[in-house]
Length: 388
Image (cartoon, rainbow, N blue to C red; front, side, top):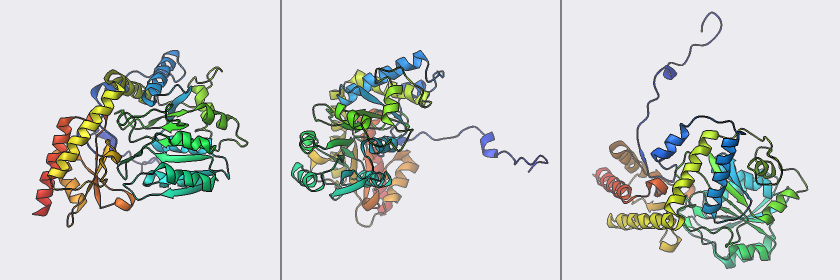
């Protein structure tokens, strides 16, 4: 410590930033293409400057396309996917109201926890990780619990499932229930029709198929969900996540934009470019590409003598594949080998699947046949090495 009482500066920060280049084939984040990294380096604008507001408006249009919605309350949460999840919770639920949570992985668990913290009531429908829900069991839950909202995960990255959503919105609405869908690990890589499927609130994340840095989370509210928020008896418990305030800042109502918070300007630039890539490719082409790469991975994994966690191909999430860890193999030895020798990320399981599966992500910029061949080579070689 100096004579003035100031501690010594950390020596690590006096050296240049040093980091390796890795191929991120886990469940997210995915690698960012050069144009998105370049967008992050563009000059700063004020968060209320007209030039930045124009970019915000372009982002909204891109999100409406990605979500396949005309909802006017379509905007971005300044935060990761958990921020959008929490925003949905605190806006849609008042204290004492019931949420019916479809839990087949950790995202249902997380949402139920948020419901409890909000002073609301979380009732659960539980399926093992790797399985999806059907309409009949959901209808039984709607009858039994009379919930204000139903939460379900579209792309469950911990269990590697893709939840069918057709018919679910109509079912929920018959029981005066709003449908909330988490599509963080699926949007852009799996078909999504927010309006046609009657989804009331849909959210995602920037760091998956959109191949942008983590930190911004798209979200949209149907007119019914918007009215529920605007007609609450109690204030939203979070000022930062208040959808009414955010919708105004994003120009989603008729009133002049008010300052709410300082948006992550550079991250919005990046998200804009991620959406531009999706628009240029086309949604249907993106869905097809992710599916074809997933099929290539599934075939390659089975040729290695490995088993996929989700047996039904139609219930697998093309964006995140779970592979069973064989008996006698330590999952981390394989992941460490792939990282050390190929700089390829292969992730482990979460929750009940910790140590039981590897999770391999196929998202956006990373969804290429070359990357699939690379991860299969790394996986196969790692298995041979650790079994010696």
